[in-house]
Amino acid sequence: MGESNRDIDSLLKLSVDKQKLSAVLRIEPNPSNIPISQEALCAYLEGCDIHAQCILNNEISKLTELATEEPHHAHEMIVVKGKPPVEGINAKFEFTEKIKTKIENIAKREEAYRKAEQEDTFVTDDKNEHDEETIDFYNESPFLIVAKGDLIGSIVESSPGEDGINVYGQAIATKPGKDLPDLIDNSLRLDDQGNIHALIDGHLTHAGMKLRINPTLEVQNYVDFSTGNIDFPSEVIVNEGVRDRFSVKAGENIEIRKLVEASNLDSSQDIILHNGMAGRDTGTIRTGRDLKAGYLEGVEAFIAGRCEIQKEITNCQIMIAGTLESPNAALRGGEICISKGGVIGSIGSVQGVKTNVIIGWIPEIEKQIRRAQDIRPKIENAIEKQIQELETLKKSLGKPSREQETEIEFMKFEVGIIEEKLVDLDAAIDRLGQIIRKHAATKLRVKSMIFAKTKIWLPGFKITFENDVKGELFLDLNTSGKPIVTRNGQSEPMNTIARVIADDRVLPIMPPKQDELISDESDDKFAQAA
Image (cartoon, rainbow, N blue to C red; front, side, top):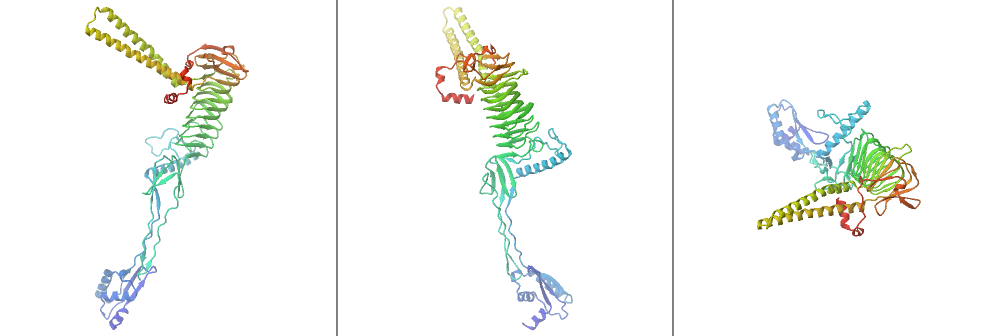
């Protein structure tokens, strides 16, 4: 090293930070005016093993100018910078804006519920449209419910990061981003773009870093203000009961383990009530298939399949499109309509409460038949009127002209058209009758007692029990369509135990024709359509 370089070195001092990512070069006062050039400073840095790529040439130039202009003062400046490592970004999952909004609304509801529970104040009416903060505890759900095909969110992939370099040119390793653990199960699907879709309907949960759609909504306690009304696309299980004025609607089965109060239940499949329902004349039940319950009181119900009640049916209005299978139940008060017959323990009560039972009734089909029967006289009158006009015209004419003959033929044609309509109408009535004969049943088995003041309708008849009748009884129509009762293996006319009068509340079922005795697949399809 030359003398001049040694003199410069004595004026220079390099300080490197702990991370070795930057260095400060200090130039001491230079009273001797030793020439200091940019090249000399770079050579000094290289002599300190500083990597050439990390030297800031612009800063070296500035520092040189300062030292030249003010040689009697010390000067220092950051003249070396390394490159810090760029850490990788961890992969992350983000919900869609729609799902985020739902989650936010659920959180608001939960907070409002806790406050209302402490103060015992719940908003029971619909939310005020001018008050966005009001929570409708009936209709705003605390459950995150999604439908099959819904876009749930997307995954942002991790990045590997980028290595850095210190002032000496040594590499600084980066920390790569972490991938997500298994985020979904087989209830969701991840596509090639990182989007996650629902594969089933259900309740979406997101505990920790795990997403799952549960096809069953299980309510641990009561359906009340804590849950709001339930409207779920598949199965619902309630481990407690359902409070007044709340509703449970499900696309599949509903199962409730304790008491159902005056509420509304609606299932596309079965409803199972382990305890029962005290409807207080406002509760409703609607099933797409069967109902099983401990008891029903003050309930209005439509049951598409079987109805199985263990203990009591009290003051209810029930339509059963299938069979009644309640051999141990007491039916007291109200009215129950049964399309396909069945079995019941007893009907009526010692107190003589009025109880109505209608058997073999398919109201929607009967409604169509009655409408057709109402139209039939109008068609007959139209035919008769047209025939009279035709006869009058014929009598008024001597030898008809060609034009008059044409008019007569046209009137005959019109009569034929109307008569065809009448034939078609009769065929439709007959076809609807076939459906009733095929899908209705009139036999009701009563295991122990029918009490006085009970009224039973069979097709074409009203049966009034003026006295209690004991014993196992089988009520039905004989092959002639007349009401009979069978007890102790012997059949007898129904009027031996009750008053029987003709009544068309339930249309009479005519005996089947011979061709109806042969199974016809088209009949089944027609019945389903009807």
